[in-house]
Image (cartoon, rainbow, N blue to C red; front, top):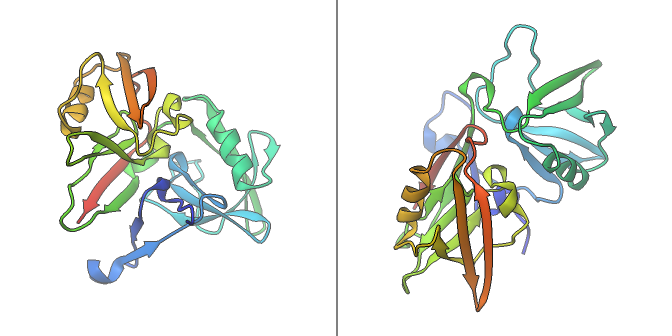
Length: 243
């Protein structure tokens, strides 16, 4: 099955073309994760095509402050933190290795112009802009619960388990990104068994930043126990779930 970029979930729906109705504006966009990437700090979706990495889509309504550049659709990214960008997998690996609150510097080509654009890793997007992530579910199925502290979409199953149904890579803590926990269930959270997905969300939302989180994921007899600390929000995101 094709690996869809949209944060490994179902769909990223963008509202575009002002002056038309919402029904006319809503479009379905699918991008291959091997050649596409979301940059939350820069409010942009990148795509590799014709040997270049370009800004395919500009998200949100980020406006430049005096003396500050912003990415625009069609911009070509040439360098990141002094190293030439070869492809999306290499860019993604280098991006994920940058520590939170450290500088991300891109060398950008826009027509005949060349410039450097800088953001802090994990910082909120300027101007209050953000990503709108829209999920589609079956009409009669259970509505999933978004847990931003874990970067997970959880669903209550008929047998009483809490299923990790989707991974929200841009907002996942680093400790969970490589854990491969999709389709696992949450069996324990800070020494207790949560009753449902909403209770996981409630427990974590009440913890202070810096609090320890111990969580156990289970699947077919396999268990993964992961410890992390609750961090500040990693970017400005808006989530919507459609049935």
